[in-house]
Length: 311
Ligand code: PEP
Ligand code: MG
Image (cartoon, rainbow, N blue to C red; front, side):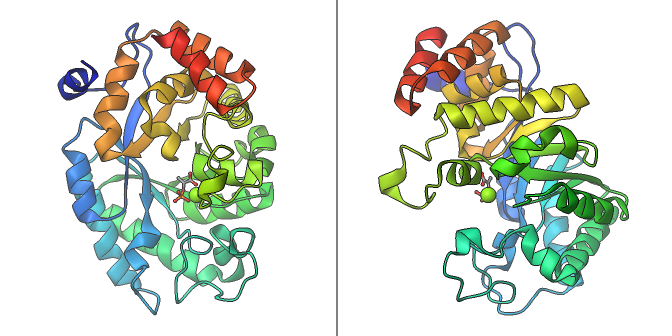
C-alpha cells in the first residue's frame, strides 16, 4: 500500500491539510542531478561539492569547477539549488586540502575550517559557483559546513553576498544550535546536517556501527536540537531545512515536519516515499508525534511513540 502511494505521489510536499514542506534532493554531480530531476522534487537541498574533487591530487581550476557546477545547475532547470562549499576532512579526506596526520580528524581542520585557514580555496570555489550561476541562470544559494561560531558564519556570509548570492550554514555542531537566533542575523537560511549533529551532540563517531543507537536521529536530544533551530527560524522568518539521513525516513520525516522545519532534503530514491507519507497525515498529527517523540527516553521508544500517533 505504501509503495503504491509512493509511486503515485507527484508533489509538491504538503500534509493532508495543506501545510507546505519542501521536498528536495541531495546530489553530488551532474548525472545524479539529472536522475534527481526526474523525481517530484522542488529543488536540491544539498549539493555535496567535495565528491567532485575526491579523485584529484590538486585543486581543480575555477574553469573546471564552473563546468562541474553548471552540469548540476542545468539539470535542475531553474529549480532552487543549495550548494555546500567544500566539506573536506574527517570522513572526506582530500589530497590537496586536508592534513593527513591529524590524531582525531573529526575534531580537526575540516569543512569551513579549511577555508578559514586558506581563504583562497573558498574564494575560488565561490567564484566558480557564481560564474556557473550566471551562465545557467540558476536559483543558487550557498552554505558552509562545520561552522561553530557567529564570527565564522558572518565571515562566510559576507563572502557569499559579495558575489550576489544568498548565504546559509549547516547546523552540524551543538554550538550553532545554541546560537541559532544570533546566526540568523547574518544568514538567509540554515540546513541541519543530522549526521554530524548526532556525532557531535552524542560524542559518538558516525562511522562506528557499535554506536549507531546514539547516532540514531530518533534520539530525543537530537530532536530537541532540531526544535530549537526550527523555533529560531520561525522567529526570524527564515527557512530551516534538514539535509542529513534523517530526512529520508518517512515516519521520521513526519516528526521533523511537526518540529517545524520548512524543507527536507534526502536521496532522490527516498523522495517519493517521504512525500507520500507526509501527504497522508495532518500537521496536527505531525506535531503530536513530535511531542511524543521528544518526551521519550531513547531512540527506540521515540520511534515507537511517533508510530503509535501516526498509524
Ligand atoms: C550531515 O552531516 O548530516 C550532512 C548532511 O553532511 P555530510 O553527511 O555530507 O557530512
Ligand atoms: Mg556533515
